[in-house]
Amino acid sequence: MEQLNNTTSERVDDLPVIIHWLSQMQIQLSIDRELPTPHGNRLGLSNGQLAVLFLTYILTQADHRLCAVESWVRQHHQILEITMLFKRLLVWASRRHPRKGKRWVVRKYWQTHWNFKSPDGWELANPAKTPIKRHIKVKGNSSPYDGNWVYWATRKGEHPETPTKVAILLKKQKGKCPYCGLFFKTDDLLEIDHIIPKYLGGKDEYKNWQLLHRHCHDKKTSEDGNINTKDVRCL
Image 1 (cartoon, rainbow, N blue to C red):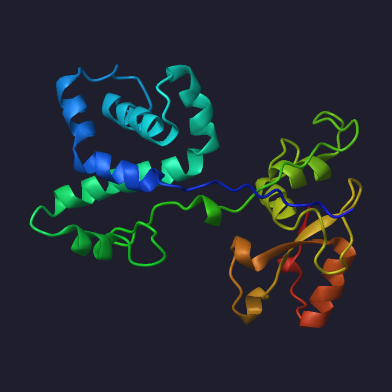
Image 2: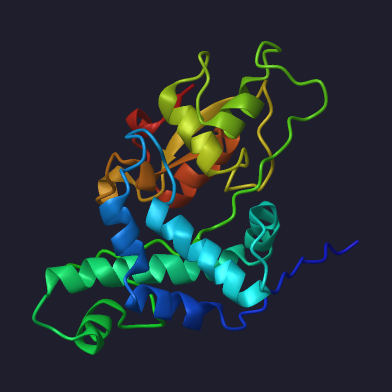
């Protein structure tokens, strides 16, 4: 059955406009200047940023109850995060160029698709571009102590009973022989093969290595026309 993707949506409303005008009034800077700074180990928003969020909630919801702010923030966390982060980056960039206008600063640091990018090429990480790595569950009753070194080296890229090169290649190839397309088994004889033979200029490096069954390696070596038996590594 096809897995359906969950799509969430948020109402933007007037949140960016209100936060913009509050920043123009320098409420955050005034509060942070007057109130003592939070604890040095504290991670999160400053007192001024919290005040801006609370004022935004009051103006949009016409409600001054502090107990209802948390649920409101959860409902609009994406637009609030984007707006607050943009303002902080804009303040930082404006301080670096005090003689330039905000339009010049925006054109310099937000060049393509409104992604923040520094002049030396460093770009702010975009969560939408982060690849998703799904966790693969352990098969059945498998255990690191069951002797199935092929499975665990393929899963983790390392195993105490397996050479480092073999374990890395097993994980890279996902436990499969690229020549025959079959999965490796614990009792299989494996050998490291040079994709480009050494006599043709191939180098000793991971991008030129592949892990094959012994009989697959013999077939590939005969196809390559290489009769140098020193190129074969028995594992």
